[in-house]
Image (cartoon, rainbow over all chains, first blue to last red):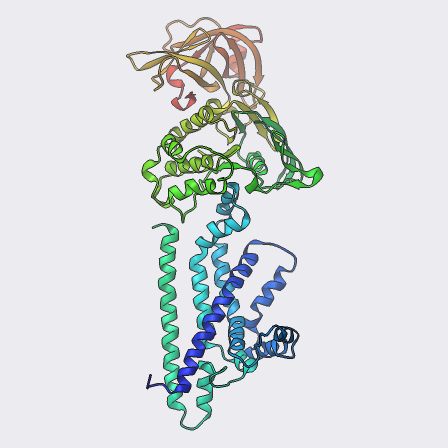
Amino acid sequence: MDWLSPQEWQAVALSLRVSFWATLVGLPFGVFVAYILARWSFPGKQVLNGLVHLPLILPPVVTGYILLMTFGTTGPVGSLLQQAGVVFAFRWTGAALAAGVMAFPLMVRAIRLSIEAVDPKLEQAAATLGAARIWVFATVTLPLILPGVVAGAILAFAKAMGEFGATITFVSNIPGQTQTLPSAVYAFLQVPGGENSAVRLVLISVAIAMAALMLSELIARRIAKRVAGR
Amino acid sequence: MTLDVSVSHRLPGFDLDVSFQAPPGVTVLFGRSGAGKTAVVNTVAGLLRPDRGRVSLDGWRWFDSENRYWLAPHKRRLGYVFQEGRLFPHLTVRQNLLYGRWFAKNTGAGESLDRVVDMLGIGALLHRRPERLSGGEKQRVAIGRALLANPKLILADEPLAALDEARKAEILPYFERLRDEVSVPILYVSHSANEVARLATTVVAIQDGKVLRQGSAAEVLSDPMVAPAGIRAVGAVLEAVVAAHHDDGLSELNAGGAALFLPRIPHETGRHMRVRIAAHEVILSRTRPQGLSALNILGGTIDQIRPGGGPGAIVSVVTPAGRILARVTRRSADALGLAEGCECYAVIKTVGIAPEDVGG
């Protein structure tokens, strides 16, 4: 790819990798939390709901700083993980964590809406036919919410691609390590003569976002068709 | 197999407090909508956990509030046919049918798919999705799905209520076949007197969350004390045998030695039938009527007169064919001098016996 400098190419590749892992690892948690919020009632449910949505409302810099304090090498969780050989601070994994946390509320929201659209009477029917709760989920709920899960995943991926504030606060802006596409655009705009690089990255960013949206539409429509049985 | 239910539960609007036994065969929970019938069935299914009581099937404990014991629905080995079918929209008919079978695979041999498909006539639908089925077809698949879960107890909550008359007439015989060919007890909720008359081995009449009376269909439906589904549902149930089919479009039944003529029914002679005779289709006469177009005239003795609310009264007449109920106005009861112990004749128009009131 001659039309991208190595640094630009690194930023694109890193962003794709960060967003991919942020989405993939976040998805099981997202489905679980969405299911809890949609179907269970327990004391403290509103607190959980608030915690999940917090990154959507807090300034991203604040979220990044909280992550740094918690998952930094001297933080309570970070120091424990470091003993286990897992380091987030100033690594691409930290960028993925930041992107995942920022994208989580959007993912949960989309999935929760689709779970609430599933008639609980179908789940009851499955239970009377001998399915334990986990099987009811796997054979009835999950297939019926697949369009919502896909939509939530793509939304989260797109959000992760664009995450900037929390990422740069938590893992800084190290080319080849933690410099994602938005951080690179920001860095290029800080140096004289960087505009051309910035514009190229902006175009790529727009292209990826458009492709993600169209892909999600396509997949969601396919699955919706299959689920509805047409 | 006997189901024992004794539960009380506070529902919005009224208290449920029922206690009954469902012996083998079809036990129909009969009552108006809102009487608490569905709550009872959901208690048995484990979908509703009542405040107090016990539920057990042949000594197998499902719920016991004293020991805080509650068995989850999926462990109760049920087949539940819901009013609205509740087929899984993302699965084909075949996958729907086999859904319960998969979870019951270690429970020994039950009905085979082939036999159930054949019995319900759904062979042509196996690869369709529920969305492309008619209401009657959906209900047949729902029955098959419940049956194939290899259940110890079949529950049916108003399974015909969402269907039109023609579809009802199509599905009801399948429940009759279930009762006669499958040994599993069935708990069936209905507010329709003709479903009760045709299906029930035992009727549990429920009103405002309480059991009003329990007994055989003939006993409960012909008891003038019981009008839980409204006065128009009152009627007697006669046991009869198909005697002959006549060329003029009539069928002749033998009910305890008395002949009963009805519009032609599609059952072979010698077959045992139940015929529900709605009380409002019966006319009473003190003398044997002459020159009357009605074909069925049964003589008997009045054993009970019960005034209804409003201008009517229910008169119970014991005839050789069985007990017959007549709904007449109090004015005519007085004019005729009807009283307990009186001889009188019950007159039933042949066309007054509706086809949906006759079943095997």
